[in-house]
Length: 130
Image 1 (spheres, rainbow, N blue to C red):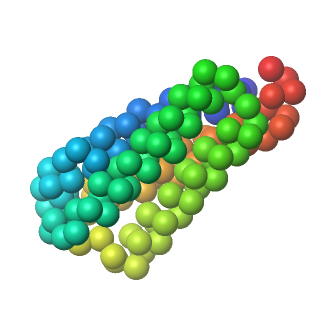
Image 2: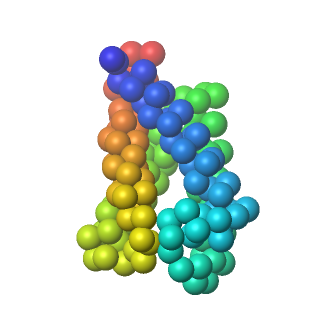
């Protein structure tokens, strides 16, 4: 699979996964806590994170898919990598209070996979061949 196709697939996963997570966090943070079996403490932060996911990941991915560019690819890769690092750090520091921790672990694996898949979208060489 060439770099542009890898980036495109990762961007599509980023868009749809972020839409699902972001939508739930923004519109139904209590339901998200119920699914994780976590305490619904200060769900305002969850709404804010949901809005950020939709604004940055969904809109950014959609714009890149509409017109691929290295600048937008760099933004999406950096965002995904930072999110994956933050989630992995919180997981290692045992900051998550969820009883269904496996759902958090799957989310971290997905975030790392998306970040890795978006790496080609942040490289100039990806666009030279297109």
